[in-house]
Image (cartoon, rainbow, N blue to C red):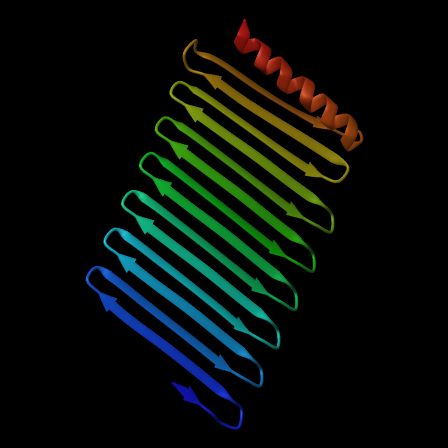
Length: 209
């Protein structure tokens, strides 16, 4: 189907069904400020795929999402991009029986803010990593959590320009050993980073003994 107007508009749609197979495709295009939208759906027994794309112009905004499902496997991907002050958001989710992975990224410009988080879970193993970065006075925060049966490790790092603070918490429930360390640094970040590595090494050695 086509439509011709002063500003030009095009619309195309396709739908096909056959036994357990279903395909749907739609495409929209409008001119002037320029807007494009594309979506695709595909279904077959236990397989389902969905793809959508939107792109409107002027301030520029892009959105992309993808979903994929099959029995015990599920994948979801989404991307958003907005221009002017610039904002980017990316998220990914993956699930399969005992395995679950989630990744998200956010980026905002002007004062600059970056946030990254990763989650991974499988039976008795769970890992979570998050990172936050904010500019101006400069603030960095990094945290890591790791859990497996009776072992739990948590690491967090905060950095605010001149003052550096490191906190490490490690727990070993098998031997009922718990180690907690916290230290604040007023030196340069390079020197503080070296001290942090040595501090974490001492904690790991404590589990060996």
